[in-house]
Length: 157
Image (cartoon, rainbow, N blue to C red; front, side):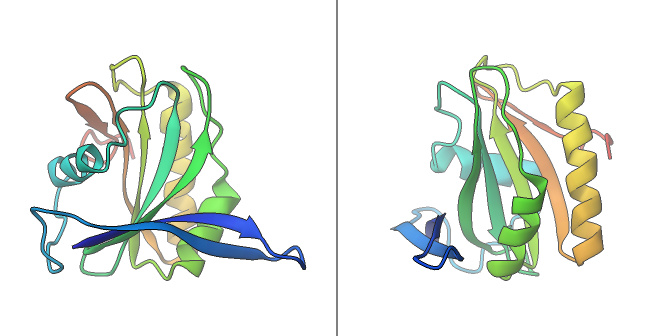
């Protein structure tokens, strides 16, 4: 499986473009691997080292309709305890990247993945956006030190 990280930029006309930052072969995964549960997504996040930041980072993981991982993009950087999530930007990116489904992941630098009320509220709003544009959010996950919290798995939405 090849993982691709993208970033958004503005071109000379002020239009959004996507740039591939890097592409990397992921050992242990084949191109047909289907991510069926939060444990597998968490292991992918650890492989991508999304759990190692000193401040909160929010990532959008892009999958096709069969839950084959395609790419990811960083959608927010915050402080050591909070990060703003651009809901409009999520809709824009999943549409432009032709996602079949997506997962939102963010790290908790404290190591404790327990969600805040803001996390749960954001998850609910993003889930509604996904339903409106017919690209479903499969999960909203907080990752910490050797553990994670899945909003879907815990029935918060």
